[in-house]
Structure formats: structure tokens, C-alpha cells
Length: 332
Image 1 (cartoon, one colour):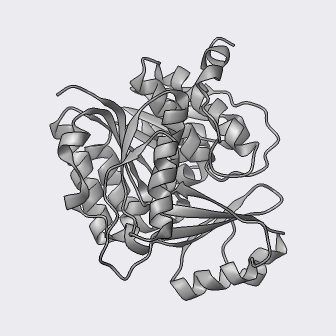
Image 2 (spheres, rainbow, N blue to C red):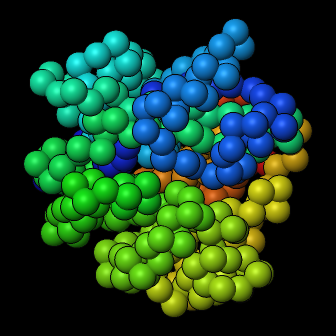
């Protein structure tokens, strides 16, 4: 089948609500700094009440969705499987994602008591992000929402680890990865968060070895997964599990493991303002590169640059396309 898109993404469709807060607010709100905490509506409402009067912004998000937007902003193409409700946030989500260059083909669910998922993302002065998330209807994405015919038109299938927190979304993820293999579509998976590695380490290990061509994680996730402090050593162990792995390490750039070889790719200097979306942007830059003729190392360089631009501003993604900077960065 003709490959119409670069990447087929699968993830929680979440409207991000972004706020900047002082460090001591996290203690007052009793949330774990730097992590994603799943909340029921009353608990999340308490966070929003605390933020009343503060400047808030919103964007169509979720980890994989932010990655898909980075692919589009690099000049690539993609289609996204994520579920929203037929409510104002759901309508905003579809419109915002389409405006960013990504089609979300799963129609809004019209008959449900569940709202569109939302994540209140709190950024402290040290640029660290803490997420307070109610998954809403996004947690009901099922195997039936995975359009295999559309997936088969893509070069890569990309799945986020956050989907492992629910049975329906986990099954949808596995269907997507298995269908990709059956249709000669490359597969990629991101660990998404350290708490997921704690909860699902055995699942992730089986998934990496059996279902994935490419794996993304950050240094903290790699340390938990491999039980080693040195990200470079983790990358060596990653090379025993899958064909291609990327371990990001903040200002130290990233480690690329490819067919048993490990390469460090330097990062770009930046004054970090907000780390929200950095890993997602990196993955988007890399996936754009892999689907558009770049080597893994060159793709990682573009991913590093894209991530550096995202952390230098407030919010999980860039506002404008980035492809006009591609030649300049890759030739530098």
C-alpha cells in the first residue's frame, strides 16, 4: 500500500491547561514534582481552583499528540488516533490539532458522561513540569478505534507509554503495534514517565524486545529500567533489546544505540524556561528524520535542536513551523 503519511500516532487525547507557579505551591497542592499524577475530577478541580486568577493557556496535547505536531512542524505528515468527547474541549482539540497539521481521525464520542481529558501542567521557576491529569474519555480508546488501513499507509507507528494505565488503551496500543508489524510499518514506543517504568517494567521489557523497532526514553526512565546510573551504559543495554534506541539526557544531549553501537549526540545550549514537551519534541524531530532519509545520529541532532527550542519557551510545543531551520542546523 502507498505510504501517504510519515507517522501514525496513538495516545491519550488531552487538552493541556498550562500554568506557571512558585515552588512551594507543589507542597500546598500535595503533588509529586516532575511526575504525572492521575486525578479524579474533584481533585483536579481543586488544582484549578488554586489557579483561579492566574494566567492560563491551553493546547491540544497528550504526549504522542505533541510528538505528532513536532513531526508536522519539521515538515512531515501524520495521522493520530486519540479519543475526545463531543464537548467544547473536544471540539477545540480536533480544530487545534488540525491547525497544527495533524489529522485526528477518531470522531468525538457523542453519547457519554465522560468529558474530554485534561491535564493541568504546572511549571515551577526551575523549568520543571508537574502534571495533574484526568484522562476522561481518552481512557476509552479501544482496538476498534485503530484504523489498520490508515496505519498501513504510514512509515512508522508511534505509541506512548501512558496508554498502559488502562486495559482498553493498552489493547489498542498492542493492536496498533501488531498491525504495524503485519503491514511492514516500523514501530516506535516511548516510556513516557518514570512511574510507568515502575509499574510496568516487565510489560515494557517484553514490548521492547517483541514489538518495537525503535524506543525512546529519558535518562531517569532508563536508570529505572536498566538499573544503572550511567545513561551511556543504559544505551548499551538497550542495544541488546531493540534495533534502535534513543535516551535523552537534558543538556547532555542524547545517546543513540543502533545495531549494538552507542553514539552520544551533543545537545544545544539553551536557557531552560519550561521542560514541558521536551521529550515529545525530541521524538517528533527524530521520527521526522527517520522517515525522511536521515541517519539515526542526524535525526537525533535535529531532535536535540527541536527539544532545545521547546524548553526555551513556555508551553509544550512551538507555535510556528520549524522546517526553515532544518538545513541550517543539519549543516552546522
